[in-house]
Amino acid sequence: MKSFAARAIVAGALIVLVAATMDGAAQDPQSPSKPAFSGSILFANYCATCHGERATGDGPLAANLRKQPANLTLLARRNAGVFSREMVARIIDGRKPLAGHGGGDMPAWGDAFARSVESPENISGKINALVTYLETLQQK
Image (cartoon, rainbow, N blue to C red):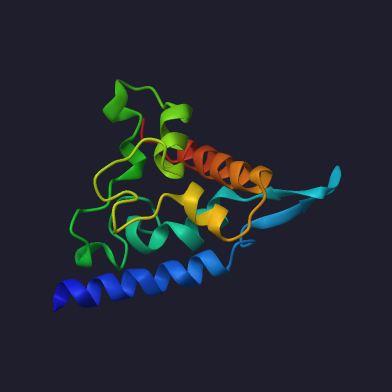
C-alpha cells in the first residue's frame, strides 16, 4: 500500500509540474520571442520535491521513493572533479537512463516537457538552464 501511495503522490506531483510548463521562464529583453529560463526556479519547481531545496537528495518525497535521490552537489566530485555538462543534460532529458531517473519515480524531463507541447527550443532552454544551475551548486 505504501508503494501505491508513494507512486500516487509522485504521479500527482508530476502532473502538476508538467502542467506548469512555462514556470521558470522570463522574457529575454534582447529577444522578445525567445524566453530565457531560470535554472533555480526550474529546479525549485521540478526537482526540489525529490532532490531537496539544496539539491542534496533530501526532498520531502525522497523517503517515499524506491531509490534515494542523488546528491546533485557532488556530481563533479564523483566524476574526478569534472562537471560534465553533456552527461548531466543527457541524464536530465533522458538520453542516459539511470535507475529511478525516468524509470517510474523520476521523469525524463525531455520527454515530460515534450508531452506538454513545448517547442524544441524551450525544451533545450529548460534543460540547459537546469544544467547551468546544477553546475553552480557543485561542492569544491
